[in-house]
Length: 308
Ligand SMILES: [Cu+2]
Image 1 (tube, protein in one colour):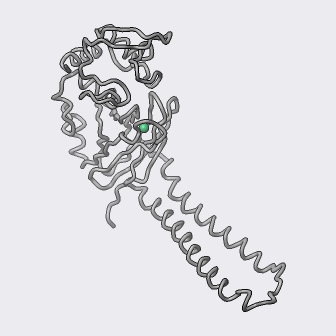
Image 2 (cartoon, protein in one colour):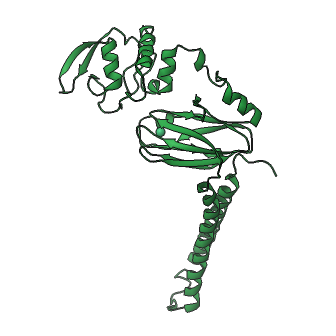
Image 3 (cartoon, protein in one colour):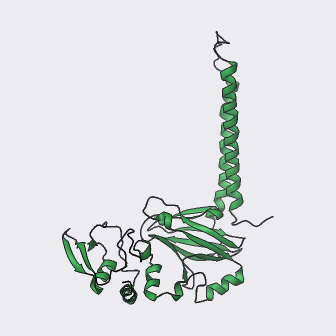
């Protein structure tokens, strides 16, 4: 048998085909019967219709058959779903973080990546974490999807038996840019995975040759809301920010002019709602005091100075 993208494919596809098959059967049968009855029992042909009442056999049949069908659909759904919640002991654990607006994956040795890299044929457990809003980690090829809820320790798992690349999406659409949270699962042969796991340079990413400040911005998903090219996304662009004069609304709702210096940048990252640039919405950004260290803040400032 051909290897499947994940061990859940068979169960989910069977449930899907059973339910689709039953639905199609009834759609066609009921529509055909309806058309036939409209013609066959037309009032012109039957001016005095018979009044039919209380057919016990019919009533038992149309109660029993749908009950059996519903239980059948439940059964296939149950068979497909229960393995998803039974996580094998000894599964490889990876922390999956969904934040505004990208995914980040952290491995047991502390290595981080923007793509999820896993070995083929091994169970992988994802510990789902969100620092900000609801997200939903969705890997269609693996037939799995799970909500990532702030403050809740949710998990999901899978095992892929087929090396390759598969899409990752965020299926939470009630926010500004969940649809932009695209990533990939890269399933590698075990030796290749081990090599990647221990390598300090991530061959899947150009990140390591970029300025450190930019790496920090990318790691914290800053650039999914703040562009580097001057375009307006969710927040103000980083381009030309350093040293510029900003019109901001302070905590009391008063409009003030400030200079974009070290202090301003630190406040904007650690206390983002204290001074919000005029024309942008308050309350969309969370504090990055926990996530960004003083040293990283310095590196960000060094990088911003180059974005004239
Ligand atoms: Cu999301």
